Length: 198
Image 1 (tube, helix red, strand yellow):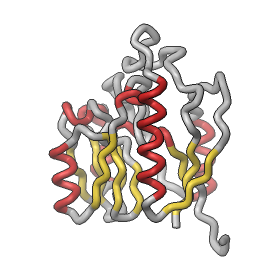
Image 2 (image 1 turned 120 degrees about the vertical axis):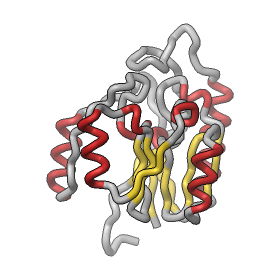
Image 3 (image 1 turned 135 degrees about the vertical axis):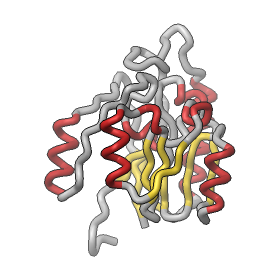
Image 4 (image 1 turned 30 degrees about the vertical axis):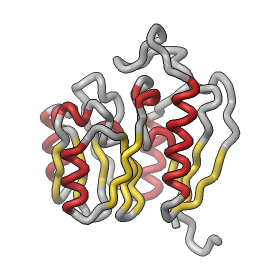
């Protein structure tokens, strides 16, 4: 059973701008964000995972530390591929690349530079391309739990392709979180798998 960490969006809002999706002038609707997060929580609760909740705190900001991620990957013996995202709307890998348990991956190739596309093609057995209009809904920002995939609504072609491969897709409205440049996966954190733990 996978364990996930989630945090209610009690203090969620567009308070700063670090990517083309974010606009303090447009902002997010707090009540709608709460409803969408609750839908995500309820969907995940019905799947084969255990959810831990962390208390929300005001004034937390997103921070991406590539050096820390590399150090962790090194300790775990993971393969690290350096890629350049050339479409500024997709400012981190989770928004344009999603590995699947059958060895394939869902991706939006136009978000990567030529080197990145080549590196990924060399490492991934099969790639499922996402259409630009579906990538704009952050359809790659999905939570994969074995044969269940929780993803933002707005990607009917991708969903049909995944269903043909035997996956069960759970499409959710994520409009308020798209405004911050994230979606389903950005709202969760996978806890480390621990052998022998209850």
